[in-house]
Image (cartoon, rainbow, N blue to C red; front, side):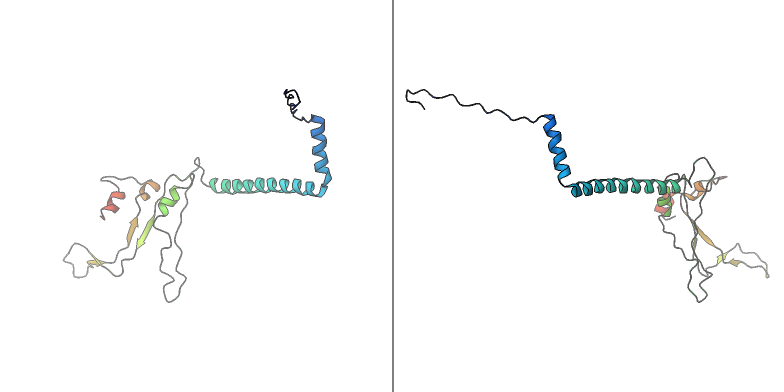
Amino acid sequence: MSGDGVQAAPHKIVRSRMSLHDLVTESLAGMLARPGRTLLTVLGTVLGVAALVATLGLAKTAGNQFVSNFDAFSATSVSISNRSNPGGGGLSSRRVSVIPWDAEDRLTRLNGVVAAGTLTRVESGSALVSSVPINDPLGQSEFVIDVLAASPGLFETIRATLATGRFFDAGHSERVE
């Protein structure tokens, strides 16, 4: 304040500006001041991008290898069978199921799979099935037969045709028929 009561005008603050030349000069000076750090930063970025490209390339190649087996334009079918029980004691000739019950659902989720079904041998033990009684003293009237369980998708998978009636479906399983 001056002695006559008049205030001095405040000074206006001017924003500092950096020219493009100064910006480039400062950037280069910062990078070249520590060349080892700059080199390691560039190397880390290059290795990261290379790892990403390699991972995506391998995943795509592996996926194409698998999907190429299920070409929709060729007649392709895949059969999966259970393996024999490796245990001894006369059990090596018997078949033990190692295929899960939901195999049909799992297979239909794969790309290119049109239909899937399962056929399983059911262990019936020594149960006998009787035939119609015939008065034949030498004829056999009781038999041991194989019992097979088919999933609802099996008949579509093997392209079965039905002369009369209808195929079993999921409703039969739900009603335990």
